[in-house]
Structure formats: structure tokens, C-alpha cells
Image (cartoon, rainbow, N blue to C red):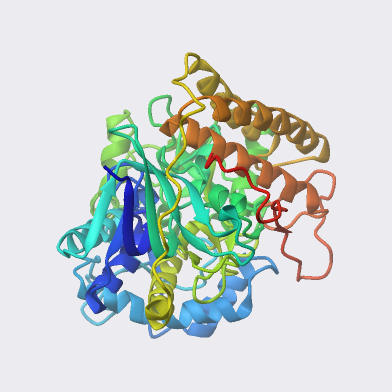
Amino acid sequence: MSNQHLHDILIIGSGASGLSLSLQLAQHSDYRIAVISKAAINEGATFYAQGGISAVLDNQDSIESHVQDTLNAGNGLCAPDIVEFVVKNAGNCIDWLIDIGVNFTRSSQPDGNIYHLHQEGGHSHRRVLHSADSTGKAIESTLENQVKAHTNIDLFEYHSAIDLITQHKSGVTENRCLGAYVLDQQSGKVKVFRAKTVVLATGGAGKVYLYTSNPDICTGDGIAMAWRAGCKVANMEFIQFHPTCLYHPDAKSFLISEALRGEGAKLLRPDGTSFLRRYDEREELAPRDIVARAIDHEMKRLGSECVYLDMSHRDSEFIIEHFPTIYAKCLQFGFDITKQPIPVVPAAHYTCGGVMIDQNGRTDLPGLYAIGEVSCSGLHGANRMASNSLLECVVFAHSAFQHITSALDTIPYPGESKEWDETQVTDSDEEVVVSHNWDEVRRFMWDYVGIVRSTKRLTRAQNRIRLLQSEIQEYYSHFKVTNDLIELRNIAVVAALIIDSALSRKESRGLHYSLDYPVQPVTESGQDTVLQKVLPQAGNTASNTR
């Protein structure tokens, strides 16, 4: 039986970007669409997003204000045309989400906006549309239900993409993406997925760090696959650390939404004194990079394991109504946010860099698109503003949909690709190597490539990741692939990209703060850190698909 699957469009990833694209394609065409999900379809960062999605919906707000706030947060590295494009398309995308059934929280004010809007860090107005404090869950669940209703969408859960298939690997000089090799986790077999067009919607890479708010599947798979295929990758040094994750040994870095600070929650030292005024006049509503560094500095200065977030001065009914998920989760760990401050620490949260794309989501490899957190669109620059991420997912899903459908009928189906070759490998008898290397990468990334960096720390990390990559490649060449091995290989690639990008930036800007270059240059604008892998010449590649 052949392991070859043929579709018009192959979408790798099942979060807001991947499902939004697949649904729009299904709504407006009879194309055959495959959606690959590494775990259950809803197990991704979208499902756990709390805050909301930003858009100009208040009469007191304006497109110009949202654009300027985003540019300010991005610290001179946003692409102004992309920022304007996304912000201007926000309203239509919100309407589409409402039309498909996303239930956003309505305002209780009779003469105000239809929907309740939060204000979060970096925003000068209330413009964050939300569904209580589980907006991502509302969006993901609605998309999932809609997608499953379409017979021309084939869902493949518990399938892990290994590598992209390109013409270049087949010895053809003119390169194009033709599909992907995908591991069926349940059978252990590697399948070949071929398609006219391939879309990476795999999310970010938070699991490259020891402490992260991301779910376990966020291992930078799309970034690593695109890099190995020769795509340009940019701005990987800008890893956003969310300032407030619940500090508890069993909480697994549970996120405490920025919306709490938007509704008046205060950050406190262990002695109960506030401290953010020392770092920024916006205090709790400063952008995330500033708040995270302030917390990091206070913890190191005081030798404290955490700081505290206090919402207890607000009315209990208001807290429970607006933040039911956070209230229930904290109560589970013994903290009543209506009565006491809760312990919080920063954790890796969002990958601002990624695979370089244009306004239509196209990468520099023909036939390959990338949308959502896996991409570097120019929207976020050196620091993503709160709640612009879900917006980016939906806007670029729509622009990719428009571009794909305008060109797909002119693209021929790819012929059969080589089957995955396992004739030279065996089952591993030393899985401990995978778990040990996995743990080591995440620990030294947290210690040496975290919120505050130095050239010495980065160089130490770079030396270690080079050795580990060599060990991992040797292991990968000798044993059958597993999901754990695929993820280890990918986080090692992403870790190396983050380190190399950070060493290339000789300044402190946005989320990248270096003790060796603590002062940002007077000029407000900066340059993207663009990396590109040098591929072997076509025709010189080994026949082994591994």
C-alpha cells in the first residue's frame, strides 16, 4: 500500500491561522485540502490564548492610533506598510469570526460599544475584543467545528511533519516546494504528502526554553523545516517573555493574562511595594519587554523567586465575571485572586521572528507559504504588542487564501516523490540521549539566552549548540524517527538561529537586551537580522530522503 497522499493544498498546523485558511478555502472552492496536526486538532497555542484580538472598534479609537502603537512597541523594526495592512483589515476579519459563530463578550453599557473591550500593554485605547478570558479557546473551537463540517478538508491528527519535499532535493535546479514527509505517530510509518501548495502554520518555538507559557507542541517545527529547505529566517533574537505566569511547581507556567493589568492589577515586590514606576511611566501598561525586564531585574536584585500580581482591590464579581478561567485555575492551586496577590514570573511566550514572508504569506521558496507565529511578516518588529498575534493569524490567513486561489489552477500536481528511506536505520536502543539533549538545550537557552543576555553567555551557548547539533544529527542518521526525535532536531535548529541572531545584533532593542550594548542607538530605526542557509547544489544531494 502506497504512503503517498495527494491534495491541492497541504496545511501544516491547526491553530487559528491554519484552520482559518482551510475554512476559507473550503467555503469558496472544491479544492482538496489536507490539515496536519501534530497532536489533537485543538492542542496548540491558539487554544490557550487568553487576552483577545485587537481591532479598532471604539469611536474614540482610530486606525492611525493602532498603527502608531504597534510601531512604537516594535521599536523601529516593524514594516509600516504591513502594520497598516493588518490594522486596516482587522475589522473585516473580526466580522468574519463573528459570522462563523465566535461568541465575543458583549458590553454591559447600554450606550457604548456592542462588545466589551480590554486595554492591554502598549495600547493607547481599549481595543482588545475578547471572549471572557479564553478568547483563543472560543476561536479555536468555532473554527474546529466549522472545519470538520467540510468534506473536502482531510484532517490528520497525531501526524508530525519531518521535512519539506522540494524539487531541489530531487536534483532540479529550479526549486519549488512539493509537499512534506510526515510521521504517523500511531502507526510509526512515514507518509508522503504531495500538494500544489504547502502552507506552514506551525506556530512558535516557546519550548526551546525551560520555562514557557506555550503548550508542549510549540517546538519551532515550521521554522526549522523552512530553514533546512533554504528559506530566509529573520529576527529570531526577539523572543517575547510574558511578564506574568503563575509561579507554582505544578502550574506549568500557566499564563496570567495581561488584561488583568489592563483592568487595574498591580505588580508588587514581596514586601508589597509597587516598582514599575521606576522603569516606565506607563507602569503596568508598558509593553511586555519593559515589564518582563523590570520583573527580572527586581527578582535578581532582591534574590526573590517571584513577584506578585494584585487584583484584590477590584470587585469580586467583576473579577470572576471577566476572568473566570484564571480565577478557577488559581483557586485550584490555592490562590484566590479576589482576596490576595498571586506569585508570578516571566516565561518564554512568543517568537517574534520566523520565516520571512510577504503580504500574501509567501516565503522565498515557490509553492511555500507561512502564516501566523511561524512567520516574520514585519508586523511585530522587535516586540509584539499584546493581542496583535491572533489578529495576524486571521489577516494573513485571508490574504494567503486570496493569493492561493488566484494562482492554484495554473500549478500542476507534483509527481510521486521518493518514499521515506529507513533501510539504513534501526529502532533506537538509547532513547535517553533524546531526553537528555532535550533538557540540556532548554536549560542553557534559559540560562544564557533569556531576558538579559551578554556576548559571553551567547558565545557559550553557541559553542554548546554546535556540539549538540552534531550529536543529534548522528543519532538522527542511525535510528528511526520518533516524534520526540523530530522535536529535538527542530528545537536545536531554532536554538542555533536564536543564538546566531542575538550575537549578530550589536545593540539593545526591544526584546533583545545585551549587557554589552545596554543603550539603544539614538536612531529609532534598526535593521532586520536576516539569516539564510547555504544549500548544496542541486544534483549533489544524497538519494537518502533522510
